[in-house]
Length: 325
Image 1 (cartoon, one colour):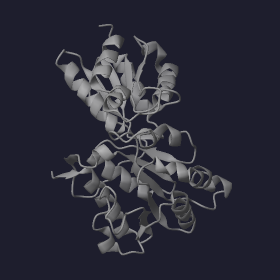
Image 2 (cartoon, one colour):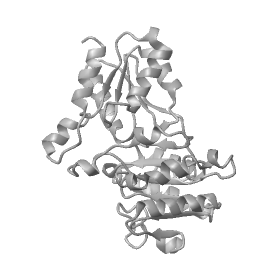
Image 3 (cartoon, rainbow, N blue to C red):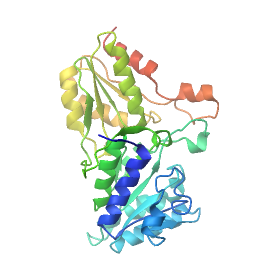
């Protein structure tokens, strides 16, 4: 099977859906003439033209609102935020228009659109460009929130998201765009709301999503050298969350560690902790441990970045704590 970059997998997903459906279009800052800030849309202006690959001013509130209106009128917009940090400017359109329109219209208006772009930290970008928003948007009914961790999942999930009749928040990472993975040439779809067991194990369950899956899998690799068997689950979507896969795994391993790039309060790991203790309390042999970011804005210094984020060392420590080792 061929190996392609994360950005190429996204490009293929969008291009294939645009060829299938003339109502699909891409709009955002630098998506056309510049081929995309991260080159996801490279070559698409030439193929699809300026009516379907649309450059916008630096005005997220405006072009997000145009996207909502287009979706209300039967089109399928893909709105690219250069970073979800900038989506805060447009959050009124995302939360108060896109997410609520179906209910407020009594079912008269579906909003079949995708908001996509990078989330979270990406090195020394400072406090205003390093925030993770997965749990923010997952808190809002009416939205679906997808966070792929590899090129294969990214392509299959994005194609599904584009075909969905509800608004989907599709969250990527700047640090993943150049990463390669195996992606089949034939068409495939991945359902929204279904987690994936990336590695089977018996001693402890590790749950994560997005780029932090590298921490989860790296932890499992290191602990395997010590004879510790970790089951690693990639949520892939955080609204809806596949609770059943997590709970069934905990019933097997009896221990749970959740790793997430988010501030600790009201995070996805908080929600999973609640649901596991509610539905599998008698199966737990140790308290659930969460590895989140530090509870502070992310500064610029590289030493601060290293201390702020989840890593393999912190996760190994948490796993050994739940194993009482």
